Length: 119
Image 1: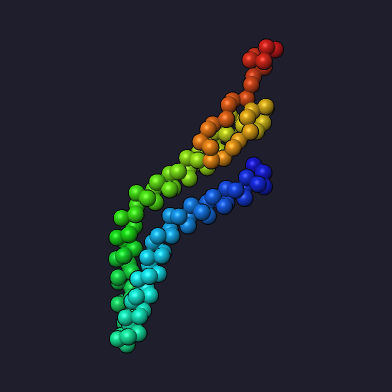
Image 2: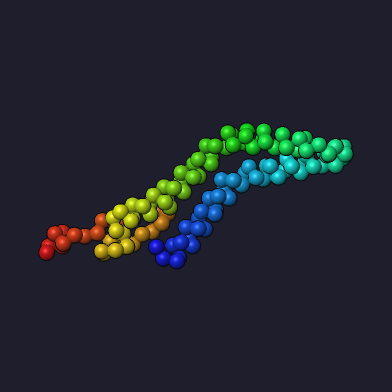
């Protein structure tokens, strides 16, 4: 695994992290802003007024968005992690094997053996 592959894997990991956690964080930011405005207008400085709705909302959104989040994480694992594990198993970059192309979902061919080469 060279430097370019590590950078690509880190970039893909960060993008997946943002895609999975982004919706919940954006909605929580909006709800937090609305609650803060309500507290400022009414001059109520109760901490539980801000905390309880947020906790309930995170719980509800986690259940509601679980299929989406699981799908994104499954795609990431299948196209990035699992392909790299398969490539290691078949020796994709050594012994004349096919070069590994992450994110394609295609496993590289096995390395040729001496018997197959006619020797």
